[in-house]
Length: 387
Ligand SMILES: Cc1cc2nc3c(=O)[nH]c(=O)nc-3n(C[C@H](O)[C@H](O)[C@H](O)COP(=O)(O)OP(=O)(O)OC[C@H]3O[C@@H](n4cnc5c(N)ncnc54)[C@H](O)[C@@H]3O)c2cc1C
Image 1 (cartoon, rainbow, N blue to C red):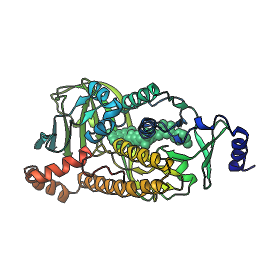
Image 2 (cartoon, rainbow, N blue to C red):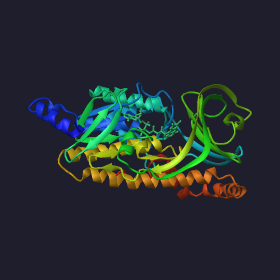
Image 3 (tube, protein in one colour):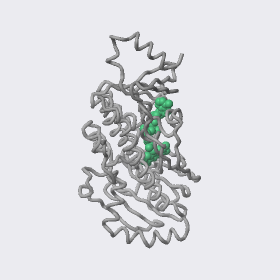
Image 4 (cartoon, rainbow, N blue to C red):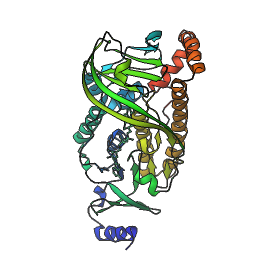
């Protein structure tokens, strides 16, 4: 029997009892996007159910930068205070070329419109703080339970779950990551491109570099990015040679806590909503880590989705389409912008190296260029519109 018909029967059977407690939004995926969406929705008075295919939360650091935009969106949930208390603020950003300083940026955060500086916290901790805030509102993530298939009609969405059960919901939010089952089930295209070279990522203890500044070193074999987090542990990202070989000889290298390789793609789903199903976070867009936008953009999607879905459930039928329209425009612009900046830094030809050597020191003295670059990195390059 088709899923929707089975659910219609269940609904008729349950009529009169229990349905008022039924979740109004089913969230697939409890990464930062899904967790933030659940938190924003519950605070708006919407009942949610959140499931995640993985048996346990992620333990890896992945996204480190929680940008000022995210901190302001999460302010009222109480999570911001905890991120700031636990994280580490970035005070300065340096640009070097082959180890020599080209420019130092010490942002005036308030003038840029930020209440706080960029805060560094491993993604696993950000997710744990979001999940704890959600738990205090009575919602626990159901782990080891993925969304397997979906069907929708005019009045709702029916999903089969990986344990063989089914779930009927008025609205489904797909925050199920870059390989999104829901995006594929909807047959949505994920256009864009993939770069062939492997990027290396390492979390390593270092004695020597300052713990309140990040830097990028433009090297002939590719950029080396370094961000401090958690005491004397630093995140190194490069697609050049071994990242440790590019560090200053004056620094002492300690324990390597985590290392990984990944390939960079830039893609945006062709649409962010189909009927009652919306996509957010990596399910909807992926790009290079340059600018630390991935997790932050997903949390922004979650904020706008929650506002639109709450209105939809209160009787404004066009609001899920609003979500798709508003966020597709913003997400596509951010992905294109990040791709351009990463391409410029990644280019390794002598001409590109010369252009960087000549242009960057000049650009670093032009306040409007610096402000623009910082606003992009801080997530303050566009207003977060919910209408
Ligand atoms: C190695 C690495 C380093 C990174 N570094 C940075 C960085 O420095 N800065 C930055 O901004 N970003 C970084 N990112 C990207 C960042 O981690 C992502 O942008 C962010 O995790 C996106 O959050 P999300 O919630 O949308 O998706 P995810 O974090 O991918 O979460 C998706 C969740 O959905 C679950 N799921 C999958 N399929 C299903 C299903 N069918 N049903 C239910 N649940 C399902 C998964 O188990 C997962 O928990 C990095 C990513 C990686 C892999």
